[in-house]
Image 1 (cartoon, rainbow, N blue to C red):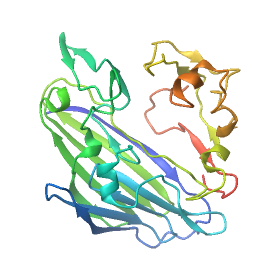
Image 2 (cartoon, one colour; image 1 turned 30 degrees about the vertical axis):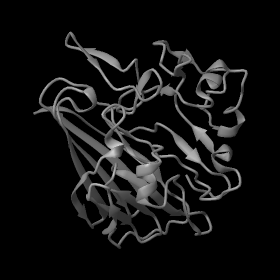
Image 3 (cartoon, rainbow, N blue to C red; image 1 turned 135 degrees about the horizontal axis):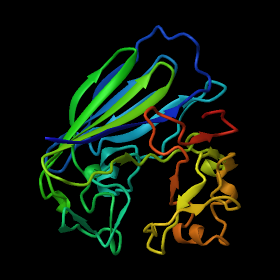
Length: 306
């Protein structure tokens, strides 16, 4: 098998109101979450620590369904946008917190060429293929490989995407590993192996509101910092043009931090009009690094969550 690669991200560190001691082990608890129409049983696994931080993951779509954490006053709230039940994820798919694959974002015309061979993918975003096509990793049942307690609670989910699945070449064996430690660090790591050349670009489609469910400002009041001096501009179909566009002097300049709501509806910026807000790639100044570096920092001034 050919290893495509192993990547990981620290999704969130809920710093507010966490106590200093770390003696208690984090937990991974499995519970039934429902059944798909074909009879497949779906489970939920809740990773939790002793300080009120917990993440609930569904085996359907390897989906991060909720992320609970305290504010500066110790009040626990869900900071993720997601559905309350399995049926809603199946019947009304909106990518809330799901694992995206085989290929995140858009492929123009659903076409790509690899080693001289052209491949056509299903179109599910008007003239493009989006997030793996009509049946991506978000719409399948994953196998729970392991769910373990310890200083870091760990959940490993696995899935095999067969050769030709949604038009992609190669059998692809993928794993997603969720971890939660006593400091409140939630990590997501991806691993993929294939038996022939293919393309893979996995991510999690988490949507955050650090103010908690029902907050007055929502994400508009959040402060976002991204160490990136350029974005990849898009055309009117949200396909990157291939250029790098400097952010200096634009509403895309988050290098010193700025409130999200200040520029997300600025119709004077063509890129904002194309994306109906921020729907762009930021080219990180440090690029790919050997060790994790800050890619973005999101803060809610009201709750104190970061």
